[in-house]
Length: 439
Image 1 (tube, rainbow, N blue to C red):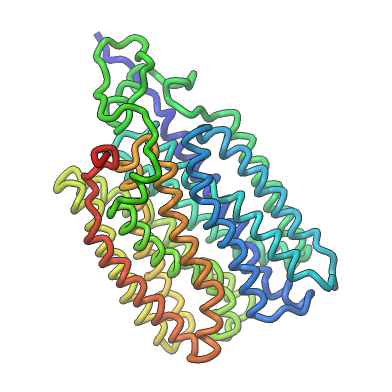
Image 2: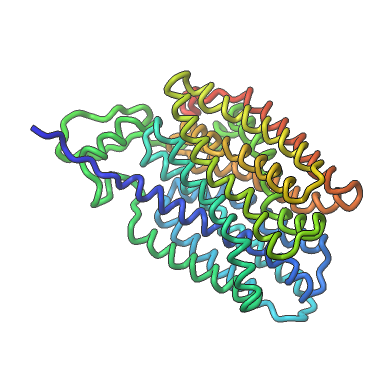
């Protein structure tokens, strides 16, 4: 008798979360490419542009916990669908601010803040999906694929936005971003379900495989199979007092704050740094600005695959935390070296190595929070991601200030120090200690 056929529905949905991740970063990074044109149209200084960048990150950070809580309560299908529609609306409104408007800065700050609030749901909702759909032994590569969308979305943004700006103006680039996002969100609504038990395309064999390897369980029976799934935890949300008293949660959140500070140098300022500081022209800046994001796209799933393999071989402590320590320490080294390279093109390559090294650790953050948070993984990962976005908000505003007073090399030095601190914070994380066990 042939074994039952196993479907791969979970991987198709993981791929579409990769697409939504790419769209999210298209919507947030486009303004860093169009920033110089917007500043020229509205008479904004670099510091004022920094306020616009930071406003997105402030909204994104403040609504992480709420986004995670909504994902836990309502499920990732509905939350992400509403979120993507929200992104489209506020991306389009960015292009609708009238030229020469006196209060333009205030409008841009408000619009980007609200865009950030809407985008806050993307990764907590994705992590809630992972906790239901992906068995523990596959979470590294699944998160790696989802977060590879960061590199792909941010990587295609400089050439795509530059092309549209040159031919149609900067406003058209925001209309384009909004339309792409709305289309991707509609597809997600049609194909996704909150739990594998509810999806019409999943096979009994795949459902059994998922249930036997995840850290939470469902009461729904597996059709066609008599072997019960392994139940690790009952599906019950954790109180916030348990989450906030966890040393694991605070250690991984601090490390992710450091991570976010470093990452947003690339998302907010790298293109402008190459053009204004390193003296590259528009075409060269657009090309070299893609290198960090291509490195992210490659290293994110690579880091997830390595973490999964090491976890099976040596356990979670080495597989998850070990990757975090090594990757963030390497990031610090690349930032120190790249900031001192004289050649603009070589500096771009070395700094891109730092971005790639940073993203080797990305899946570890989200795999650990999915494991320890279980049914509350959306809330736990949302709280952690709030830390990263607060770090990003700090770098968006602080980087030009440090650069103006001490030079751009000093800005990268600050980022290198934070990367090293983020590596040390991983040493305090115990990925085998579930929050449910601490109650």
